Image (cartoon, rainbow, N blue to C red; front, side, top):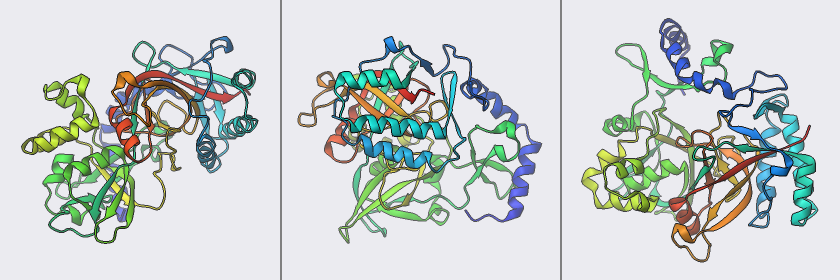
Length: 418
């Protein structure tokens, strides 16, 4: 971002002078019980604690429906993350806290266990002997709702033309992110504020909403487009997924676009909006159903899309897609959770349901699966201990699974015993 130093002084003075910080902290105060204070013990374990340590006799039956395929690569990615943060960084599991050095040892010990190609019995005995297990308290009767996301592929162009008229914007130059922890230690752990400076009032205000961005004719002067797409619906779903591949029509090359930031406005589900308006039955709701409805009702597209005030900006990068801890996510091995309450990079065990890759059928036909996964991402709609989003990869299976996945299950976190 290109901002001169005087603006920094102005932003600081404005926030100190206003009551905005106090109001924000009151709203976020309910999250305080989820964070430790740097000691070896975390918050007192209560029904509201997102992770509860369970006794070995209550451990689930550990097995992997996909024969550990891709698991080592995903663990390696978490190791990349843990090895670049301070070794003293703390991660909270229920009432316990572990540092990054301990997280590294947890990953390495689990990889050594996998290298022995253990039988199901050996795997479970070793986990009971070596690892502590914590269960997510969930939300609905103790269950976690698993949804999916994927890396879509669309056609596009580096320059606008009569076909490609919808810009995928880069991060705007007038977007400001305010880290309150720079002002006082008491604000550490709180969300950064996304804002802009109003040129007329010289006050810091929330950044433009989706509706406002779409109404600014020269918005591309603030945010240079990284690519142009054929469909506004494609652009919207690219934002929902957070990354994607764009096949350039004029060069037949593939461009990788990744999440660069957002306008900071609250994410609101258009699927839930369409259900409330009785446009799509809850039982029929899917990503595919939303797309079909939007394409069949172009005259109501503004109404529905503007319901979600959040707007995502992109950048081009090689490789990926990358999760919120800036490592590559692995198909069916990476999950997104609420990063405010669950330990980043942590080893997890998920029990849910997935479709047969050779026979894509309705939800009731999906088979129960159990998978070791890594907590490597987050999302605007993933909030609380009862939500997890599974990265499904790229292609038709990934698109079908991510579009229809809405399955209850259980989520566990594993960490090496001290």
